Length: 366
Ligand SMILES: [Zn+2]
Ligand SMILES: [Zn+2]
Image (cartoon, rainbow, N blue to C red; front, side, top):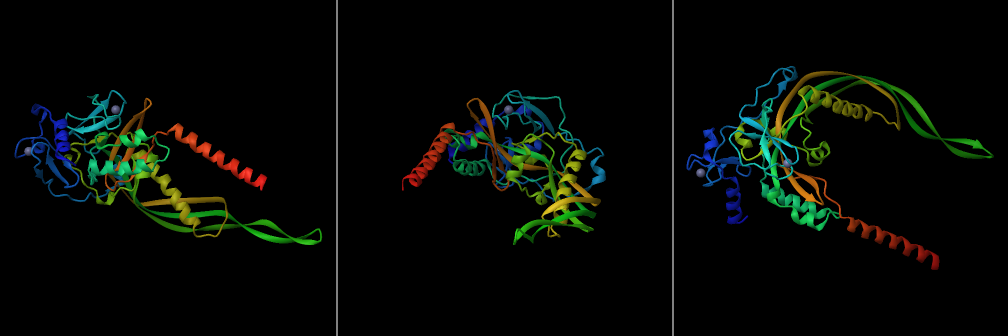
C-alpha cells in the first residue's frame, strides 16, 4: 500500500468535529477520529496515525437460554441508517457520519427512527484489513472462469466495506431416546429357468436406543442481510474467541440489524441439532434405507451468546445488476455470486460440441 492510498483513505473519512460527542473515540494527540484497525487490534487515528489500546479484552461468556427471552441491554451508543439506493439497513456507532452503504457503495444513507435493538454481548473483531480482504477476493475472482474480465478487474479495496453480522451461538447437551426401522440390501440367488440368478432383496430391522450428543457454539444467523448460503461458504467464524462487546470495535465499520428474534434463532438451531443427532444415530448402523426414525430429545445446559462476526462486503454493478461478494474478516475466505459472461459460456458450449462431433467422425470413419 502506498502513502498516497493511505492519504486518500484519510481524506474520505474527514468530517466535521461538532458531530463527535463521544470523546473516547477522539485521538488524545490531535483530537482526530479514530477507527478500529484490524491488524493491530487497536484504535487508529485517521489524522496522525496514532494507535490506542482498547482496554482489557475479556472473552465473552455464554448465558443461560432462559435469559434469551427476557429483555437484553439496549444498544444506545449506535444508530440505524438505511440506504436509499438499495434499502440495506446498517447500524453505525453514534457520531460517525462519513459512511457508505456496504452493499451498494453509495453514500445515499439516512438515519432512520429505528432503534438498534439489543446490544450484542460479544464480538469477534476484524483480524484482516480491507487490503488483505481485497487480495483474497482478487484471487477468488481470478478462479471464476465464467466471470467477465471486467468483474475480475473491478475487485478492489475501495469497493469493499467491513460489516459486522449478528449471530447467535448455542450450546446444549442433548439426551436422545430413539426407535425406528432401517433396511439393508442384499443379494439372494434363486433358481430360475434352469439356472441360479441373483435377486436384490431388502432385510428390514428395528432399532432403538439412547444417544447423547453435545453441541458447542452452533451458529445461527440473526440477520438475513447476507444470504445464509454465502455465510456458510465463508464460515467458520472463531466464535470461541469472541470478546466482550465494545463500541471501539465497530468504529469505521457497520453492523447489520437483526431481523430474527433469539427465540426464532433457537428454534432454527434445534432443527439443525436434530439433523446432526439423526446422523449420529444412523452412523451406528449398517443400513441402506431409512424407513422411520423417531427421536425424543431432551435439552440440558442450554446456553447462548449473541455476538457480532466480521464480514467484508464487496459490490459490483454489472449490466444494471448489483452483485455482492463476501470475505470472512477473520480468515479471508471468500464467497458470493459473480456475474457470468455469456460469451465465455457460448464458446465453451461450442468447444464441447466440436469435441463431440470430432469423436463421432473418428468413430465413424476409422
Ligand atoms: Zn491523531
Ligand atoms: Zn445500498
